[in-house]
Image (cartoon, one colour):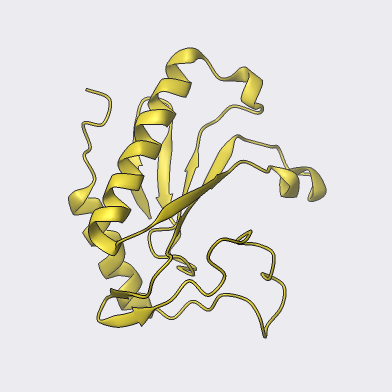
Length: 147
């Protein structure tokens, strides 16, 4: 679900999995980080700052993981494109959609336990709750981020 579409970047709300409330993917059509212009980096910085503000205000996020890995495209022989995973992290239990949410691996790499069914962070939100989280973020997100 599209949260934001700018001149160079789009922000996609990760509606298939909200292990970390507010989780998004920020992407553009460039193949490599070295292909990005100064203007593209500037817009990315504004987007990242706005996502942090939104997640702090709405969900009480403590800090953020912001990663650009691009491994899967090469592994799966797909055309790579620059994209970042925006992952809000939560030091304390917080209430999201009337549910108690706890980031049980706060302070650690968010993918360290991703392949373990017993240790991975659980997505506790229903489809309807994910839509509600998206709508909250969409209503709060400043669409004039670059002005």
